[in-house]
Length: 481
Image (tube, rainbow, N blue to C red; front, side):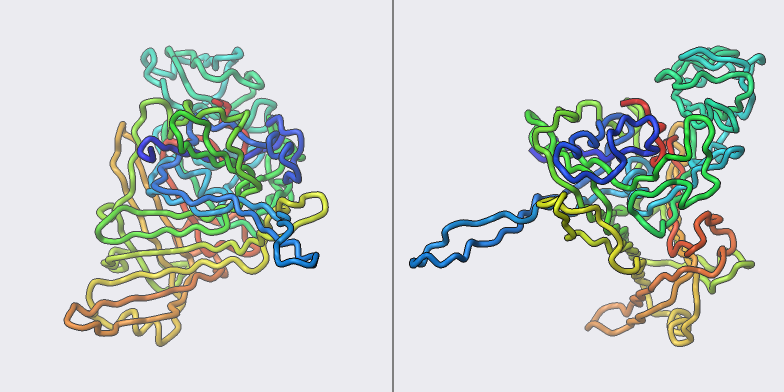
């Protein structure tokens, strides 16, 4: 029964050090894919509405002429798992898929914290006194009433051996935090930590989506603590979907995200569709025998979906010095933006056949979209179109503050041009404006947009999210398998 289905996605490997992967390379055999498959559990569930991921086999007929008209045989020459996953756009539950599509989240430096940003909500930023395998201890009574910090997360940062670890708080008194799971490296007197319950992620478009050393894409990647100079950033993941409540889930391994399409109309919720390219699909997984541990957040926490009533759309002439104002807010009836990573998915080698090699960019990425205005009442967009004006835009979804946690999603487009203006009259109906746009890599940081860490080239689109997800999905920080 489809109503009993559920699905999850987790990036494979994250920071390769400490993940237990036998290889950091894209698999060439089913056995290697078995070893790379990730266990799906807490924080990995996605709010999917449908999926069309299929195993596709390419075949060739035996055309040997044997004196009769019968086909003597068929050879299968290529196997590929690919298809689309459609989801309701939520403030939680889609971090890993969006990260895999975009390709980069700031990892911090040796001295500064990473993204997600732990400082967007109320937090404690303090020095450690000591710790044990499952505690963090302060010399001062900073943690408040007993168990008041349960459910928060503590992040160790700085130039120390235990830096880079994130753990969930399970108990506290004024001096001691109890955490789960145990520390890999116990914090000590030299460590600094942040304790928070609300986090901000900012995703940028990476130049490449294949496996890379972190230091090759971001030279100041922190190589102290639990991180290392040999760490790789991996943008592929395990996607699982339970189709039969009594059976095992289908697990598509080594999925890369080729396309991502976000859409909104006046009568519904924000939706997002991901185009996946996987190595293979396993229907008898030894790693994911079920999806019983799958959850969006911690057990029992609610998630919230983004809908039309939460949205505000802003657009104005591009500027590195003048920010948006309320006069730049435009009423729209629909919005769509799509990312095409232009990944090649039909390359094979002697070693990989009949499975594909790792997908890689075959052409330039493309970010484009469309907006619809409810009335044709002024000439602003027509003037911009005629003048080929360089513009910047953002659409912001502001959720509720369930449990005092702010929920926010922003799609930032720092530089764009209009490529179609349509105000045609379609019979006896209201004349609307339909505008298509193409995003381009900006020359600099647009005013009040997130500062970009990748600048060669800069991103045509950024996505920021405030939510309850405390991990950088490209780092091996979620230890709650």
